[in-house]
Each structure stands twice: as C-alpha cells, then as structure tokens.
Length: 425
Ligand code: MET
Image (cartoon, rainbow, N blue to C red; front, side, top):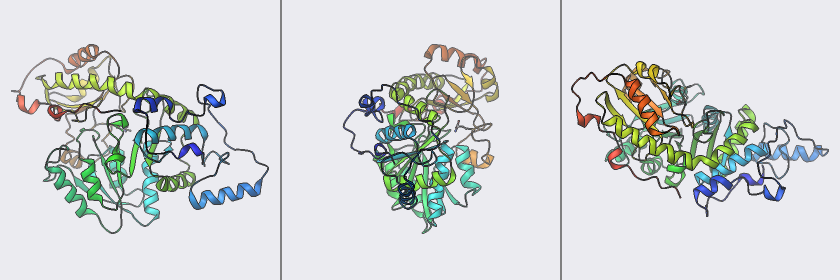
C-alpha cells in the first residue's frame, strides 16, 4: 500500500495543524495545492510477473509495496490520504476506510470471525443498526450485552459504576470472544463510560470504541487503550452532510486484515468521498469546537425549560444534545423550521430526530427502554447556525408551556456539572 498509509503515532504537531496538513505533505513537491482525485478503477502495468508477486503479497500480508494499487478494490491514493490524516488525528499507526460506518464495522466483525472469534461483548446503547447487526447475528456473531445501567450506575467516567461495568465486561468475556464494542458518548443517549477502565477489563480482547460523536477533537480512544477506533465518517469527519463513509483507525497489523476483508467484500470508499473526507478533516477542530459551544448553551437552556423533562449532555462536551420532552416528541420534529428534521448528525446545519422512530427503530422496544432510550427522547445535532436562531426555532417547536409539575432536579442536564473543557492540542 502507499507508503503514506502507515504513519508514526507520535504526533509532534497540534491537532489543528495535523487536521490541515496530514495526508497532504507531498503535495507541494508535486506542484499541487489541492489533493488530486484519482478515479482509476484499474492501473496499467507491463510487468505481469511483478503484479502477480504484489497480489500474492497483498493476499498474504494485506499490504502492497510502493506503486499503483493494481485495481481500485485493493486501494486508492486519494482515499489513502484521508486514511493517513485520520490515523494521525486519532494517534494510531493506520486507518482503513470503507463505504460506510456499517461497512467498517462489518469488516471488523469478519476479521474476528475468520479467526474463529465469533463472540462479541457489547455495551448498550449502541447506534441502532450496530445493535441490530449484533443482536440478529447477521454475520454469524453471537453477542452478550452488558447494559451500562445494570446495577452499575455507570453513567459517567467518574462514577463507581466504571468498576462495576469493567467487572461485568470481564465476566462476559469467553475464550471465543473476539471483540468488545462500546460507544462513548453513546448514540443516542450520550451516555459516557470510562474507556481506560473498559480497555483494562478487556484484557487481550480488542476494544472497539465508536468515536463518531466525540471525534478526535474531543477524545482519542486509542490513548485509553482501544485497539480499534470506529467512525461513521458520514458525520463530523465529512461535516457537510454530503458524503457517506466509514473508517477504522488501528494498528497496522489489524489494518492489514481489514484491507484484505475490504478487498474481498468490496466495501470500498469512493475516491471522491475520500477527497471530501480529507477536505472535511481540515475544518473538523473548528467545526466541533464551535458547534459544541452552541450545544452546551442549548443544553443549559433546555435544562431550565419547563417543557423539557430531562437533558442529556456529555461531560466531555460535544455538539450533540439529547432531551426528553413532557409533550409529544413528534410535534417537536414536525415543528422545527430552521433545524432540519432528519436522522444523521455532524453536519454544518443542525438536525433533530426521534431515535425511537428512526435511528433506533430497529432495536427491540424493551431493549431501547432498558438502555435509557425513552420514547420521549429527541436527539439534536448542533450545527454552525447562530445559537439565538436555533433557540428560537426550538422554543417555537416545543410549543406552549402547559405543565405537569416540573421537578427541577430531574431536569438538570446530566453530565453538565462536571463538564470538562475539550482538550484538543
Ligand atoms: C439509518 S438511521 C441512522 C443514521 C446515523 N447513524 C444516526 O445515528 O443518525
């Protein structure tokens, strides 16, 4: 594979600088400013023997030596630039990009399944389709759910629940466990967990942390011991709601296996998507910080609003807010005019959706409820609009104040009290 794909995990430059320059270091030498988009599906060579050797090496090792990738399903130079940049931001050796976040998760499960390690330990809530893939055993996997609410009270990194959750995970691990999977902050409740404690509890089993909501701007799970960092790149990495993609940041050994699965299954990222994702990374720190400030302010206002029963906002911060209304949540999604009523997240414009109807519809209602996904929960992705305009839209959509007696303590935003400043450096 292209030499730029494997990078040193030691980052010497600040995150904002890497976001703009990683994966592009050779451009000036090429006489270019913007990254070139290579749309080739195949790559000519008059040396068939040489190509045979390179294909053998890829089949055995998941790595191509220098030179063109033979065929676009093995690799693509534009996509490789995005992979290099994302690996640098997450502080991992490598990254492997896919057509979507679900294609990326599929590849991870196939890698482990192929090694005979078909058992997965997972913590709810997870994104609805991830939950469904594991619950239904679509890829021949078997899942043991460890519910973060079960007796642990493990709602935050600082709670004693971290130990209980770690214990529950360690107890759930079997000889055929190939993966432990978590989200923090989780989709859609924004529940957090102590990634370092979970990684420790995993022992030798790789921990996959979905970092889609936090992004490497707020949190780098590899530094806490996660071997695999998953992103739906469709969200904050792309940042403009116009590109679908997924990526796994990890060590080079795992990356080689992922590339082999990607070649076999064909879930490749399109080069144009690779270009857009690379471009999206350049503004990631600025977008995430600006949208997070807006989200924190909206969380504060929602928490003080008598029409809102409960607000979920991570201690870590971030641009997502979830809240439970006393009234009909469907009326709120129907009532917004500036905010887009749509699933997905991470775009420059704000989106709101009802998880029980869309993102988590496919999860059994009982499992949704027991993992804290109430039918009255709304999930909002804050964009870059002015906070006052967003608030007036939400305020109008929430409708008239007609109250059950509101318990101020219940309405306090979870996590806000102990919220840390995002430490992106
Ligand atoms: C197809 S529904 C969900 C899309 C996206 N993963 C979200 O959580 O919004």
